[in-house]
Amino acid sequence: MPPEALPDDRPPAASLCADGASGARRLVVLDKRADFLACARGRKAPAPAFLLQARRRITAEPAGPKPKKPPEKLPETPVRVGFTASKKIGNAVARNRAKRRLRALARAVLAREARPGWDYVLVARRDATATCPFAEMKRDLSRALERVHSPKP
Image (cartoon, rainbow, N blue to C red; front, top):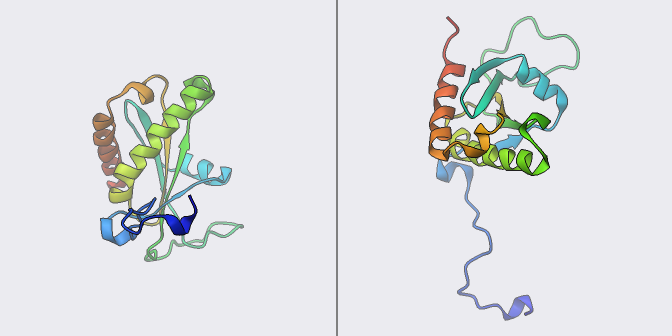
């Protein structure tokens, strides 16, 4: 059926919602190995179904040595998140299933509760990520975020 023949009362194929309208932040997916390694050196919060790694990002990270003093205030930047499922999780099907659940978890929790200017990595755990009830995973991620953002003792 040609596009001009579609009825006008038909809903759009995809709904567009501004980030601010739903109260959720925009999530950007990490894709560079250096970003994953930097998160691994940051704060960690274990949970039964996953491991949360997080670090506060510097706005314009230089390629050379780190600056002596971090900036006073980060501008509003998107939340960046990465997903990892190693071969310990299982075959490609099991790894992809685990990453799919972690992506859904990030959309449900991180989009609302994550802090701007931070990078997060969710690491899948063998068997637990695929079988843990989703409501429990959401609760665990909220608690893990609290632990990561609490001041160090």
